[in-house]
Length: 328
Ligand code: AQP
Image 1: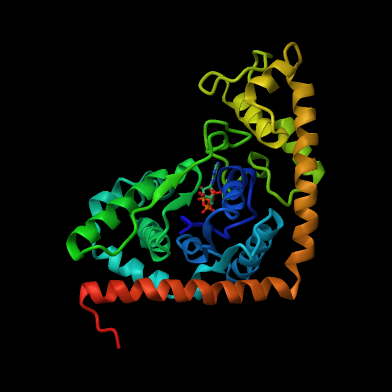
Image 2 (image 1 turned 180 degrees about the vertical axis):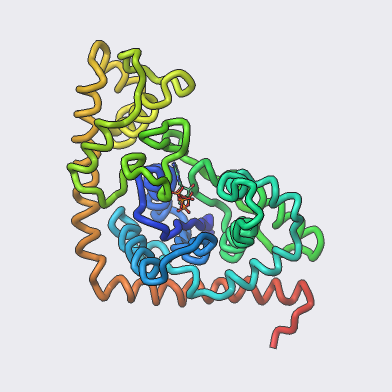
């Protein structure tokens, strides 16, 4: 049997290079050899306030981007989380089998809530919904960026705890990150991760950015005053981040890129990077605009939802049986 894979992206805005390099590239790679289920996790998005109409649109945008970067609905199941209610059901069961202490240790919650008493409860329980997403599909492997590693660890703990208490129920999943690009940093503040919600649009490059915007964001990106292109994350986080992006899009090793630019200044390096990124984004954008308004997109999501729902219901039958709910 092929290993099972589950992952998702929130429709909180346009997918950026961090999401693409850290997560989506892996989704595409794995679909040829593994049994993959990929979700647009709209229920995660409402942990922070969203405009309803915009959320509906960005959900479809992300689905179209999934296909534009190369996900093939014939190979992988693609669906929207809220169309499969078992996610919420399992999340509650896991909520009742988790501890507030372990959730309080999640760094993403600490970062996003900033210690505020009025942080939404959903932000606190978000990792339990994420664990439910993964466990519903018996995933062996979860391809995500390195910022999600702690949540995968929690998912493993919850699965092991549940199995010990109620008998074998869940597959215990493993984290899978990229060797290069597991955490792409913000272009303006390269010690922070690139993020959809950062205020400065030049902190990120979105997959749908126009060539001029890409140029502006890269040319403005924060570097250092040394003027030497070398990879050193702690001393030169800006240049190291750009080298990572260059390496991924050119297919060259970081060392090779460093050698290529020996003696060159940051200006030429950045100009070349603009070209490489735009060349890579061009076919993705063309495909995206073809798919976004097509009937096919809705069909893919409907069929994906049905397929995912059947798998999820099977798992829930097992769970209901174990915890003492009536399966009628
Ligand atoms: N900067 C990043 N580098 C590498 N991988 C990243 N991911 C996110 N940012 C980076 C990975 O992308 C996948 C989808 O992320 P998400 O949309 O579910 O949520 P997120 O991690 O919260 O993404 P953002 O962009 O940072 O959104 P906001 O600003 O809304 O919080 C995940 O696999 C994630 O690891």
